[in-house]
Length: 313
Ligand code: FAD
Image (tube, rainbow, N blue to C red; front, side):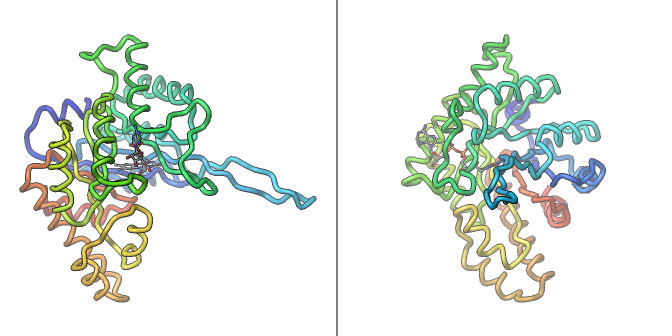
């Protein structure tokens, strides 16, 4: 079933999950066992992130270096296949513009159709090490909006119609602004371009202050973005994340949460509890404020997410 159909049916808000494909070497059973505890809460779908191949430079005997393409993780398509073979749940592979030419993305869309996958998340991806700014490969897409248009074009060219689309498409939104955007207003106008290109819903970057999300949602509506906006949450689990997450995702962590996490000091369990309880508080508040669903970034950990789902859904 398409996520857009699930969302348009309305009803009680539901949880969805996002996982990162395992590093190569992990078995299918290990992956499925890591997800199994979360199935008790009947998440409607699982998003599977997509990771660009990286380059490694290896020194040769003559002292020069050769460049090697390295894929560290199992592909998102393989992970979706494994999940679908075990659980009765929709999977949403992420597709990124980075590192892929238009023809490669088209091939992936054919594979997804073949597998019976009818949901995708369309993203630009980030620059890779050594690249100052995101640069598409020749014949690739610059922005996620171009990718959304390309997916809609693919459908049209392969017998789809606006009434009978192959894919429901999600896109990313940034309550605290995408780090490259000059201001939130412009970023929201760019988000509208993704909606206008045919995206069905938005999933937001994680945030730790719900008022930031509510403000973002209001601004999006004022800008004419009418598609559902699903908040993305991640519970903090370590004190180190107080610096790691702002650095990686350009977001703010509220003073109150920072102080509570810092007070945990070396007590790992206390930090874990503080992060989990904050997330429960955020989730309950969001559910009371009209969100259609809550998306959880699990980062491969199920203990805290299980607890949050048990408390909130
Ligand atoms: P875009 O929507 O293309 O935006 C990128 C920047 O360009 C923004 O500053 C925007 O304001 C600007 N912009 C957009 N359109 C235009 C336009 N038409 N003209 C001018 N400027 C424009 N990354 C991964 O590598 N793999 C993943 O699986 C992954 N999953 C994610 C899931 C979610 C829910 C989110 C929110 C992010 C995810 N990311 C993932 C990270 C994402 O790839 C990065 O944040 C990336 O830097 C931006 O991606 P985007 O799709 O939002 O890009």
